[in-house]
Structure formats: C-alpha cells, structure tokens
Image (cartoon, rainbow, N blue to C red; front, side, top):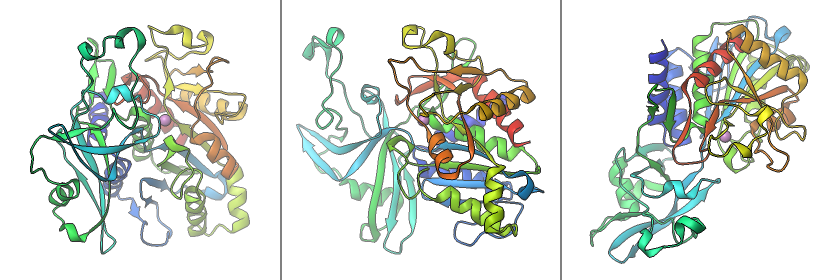
Length: 416
Ligand code: CO
C-alpha cells in the first residue's frame, strides 16, 4: 500500500509541470472514479463531481446530511514558483538562441541554474480551445558562470541580475526555430491557429526517494503539489459521510491569490453555493450550512534545517518525518484558531498519526497560505497545516515520505 501511494505521488509530480497539467491529471483520476465533470454545465444533484477553472479545481462527494453537517473542505494550491517564458521570447546571443523569461512568485533563483530544463504550458487556439503541451525532455539550460570568472562567489554569495542572468539558452543552431514555431510543432497545431501561448520552464529530473533509508522525497513543486496529492487521494479513498467532502485546489497562491481563479476569487464560494442549491438547500440554508463547515488548508511547512537550526523557534519547530505540522500565527498569517487546531489534532488522533507545531521566530516572519483567505471569504473555521520540508521554493525541494502519508491519513480521518 505504501509503495503504491509513493508511486502515485511520483506519477502526479512527474506528470504535472504546470498547474493546468496538475488539474488535468487530477480530473482524469476523478473521472476514473466516476466523479461527474460539471465544468461546462450547471451542477445538478450527483453523488460526486468536480469543476475545473483554468489552473484551479473544486471536487466534492455529497454527504447524506449536508444541511445538518456542512462542508468538510481541504484546500491547497496548484502553483509553484518558477520561470515563465515571456511573449516574443526569441533572441540570439554569442552563438546561442535564448528565450526571455519572467519570474513567477519567489523562486530560489540559484536553484534553476545548471539544470536540464523542460518547457511545458498550454496554447489557446482561434476556436477558443486550450491544449496542453510538454517537451518531456530537456530543451533548455541556464548555465552558472564558471568560478574562474566569478572568484568571489563562494565568500560573497551568488548575486543574480533577474533580467540578465536567468535567460535560458535552448539551441546553438543558426537556423533555429522560433519559440512559437516550436510550440506549433510540439502541439501539432498550425501556427496561424495559435492565438496565445503560456509556457514555463521546469526541471526534467523525476521525483525520487532519497536517503539510505529512502525516507525522503525529492522533487520539484512539492510546495504545494504534495498537499494536492494528499487531499485528492484522501477524497478518492473516502466513502460518503454525513458532511459533504470538498477539495479545493487553487492557482496563484504564490503571487497572492488575487485572481479570478485564485483563493481570493469567488470560485469556491460559488461552487459551494451551487452544490447546496443542487441539494435543494435554500440561500439561508446555505449560510447556515457554512456555519457548520470546517476547512483544513494544507501547505508545506518549514522543517528544521540541520545546518541552520537557529532559524527556528526550537520549541515549536517541526522535524522531518515526525508528523504533519499544525501552523500557528497570532497575527493571522495562518488561519488556525483554538477550535480548528483541536479539530486537526482530533483527526490526527483518529488516524493514529503524530503531529507537530510550527510557530516562526518573532524576527523571521512566516509566509502565508490560502487558509486566512478562505476563512475571511467564507467565515469558515479553518486550520493551517502542512508537511515539513526543506528547500522551499527551490526548483527541487525535499520532504519526508512518512509525513506526506500521515497527512493523507489525517485528511481521510477529517473527511470521515
Ligand atoms: Co505553498
């Protein structure tokens, strides 16, 4: 079972270089499990369904007594910091054909150097259709300057100019194809049919178990595709309960969530209201249902780095493979309340998994998550939790295998 779960995590990570690829991968899993796709039709009474909204998705399994028991929601985000290909990206420089990029979110820039990079994205055609594409092989590279030409790098640290030093090279041929030409060839769509291209770089290295005990999982996009996996697989493995089980995965968290499809937009609220309506719950009944609902916002946490323990408040510092972390912040950067904390602790207990606590140092303010945003929008009691990881926002991150499996079990217990 454990081996199967790890294989399914790795399959998801390797198949999902972009939020849209992730949502596509998850949609196919849901269809296989007989969830009804309501993306292009109005939600009607159904045991389980899902709605895709670009790089975001809401999936649910209807409860037997939703009006009395509310929604049990697990939220996470589908996007990760990366380098996006700009429009009109083609350039020629000193024997190389290069592509200009735009920084998405706040990646650890150095982590994108000297990697075998693939390119994935989607095109929109004249007829308004969207088609995904993926090079599947390394087609680009951003090379670091040799130490002989940058003698101070070890002592002074690497300083990268965001406009100049992150430009990938992708061929050395004089008559190289344009980026648009390459995309047309890759998607097998005539150039004239393609109206818009959205693309990004990704590390082609596959997800891998690391350590002599194979206890670590290394991959790109663990923040936050690890939580997406835990949420969706918990939903798929659950059976119907009294409450309606919901998984809401949002794009654009890494850039503040304020978009039509982000957590600050109306996507989840509208979906919940439509699900309630399909169950013949009135508008007033819906507002009552929200009061009985709860939400777990799952997003990775910072584990203690053995080389930098001073960056944590060691009394509230999560260790790798000691259980998912409950994230607290009095200033509401995390949504966890005393009531919602108790809810998660109870779920961990029922799942027989350990949990830990993360509270940041006062002089090192923590990030935030979709938790406070959902709590603010819907007024639903929300708890922020997450798998402890290292190298957050690197092109290749690492977390504990056991923590990820424990989070999945805790989410299943929450749904039950
Ligand atoms: Co995150």
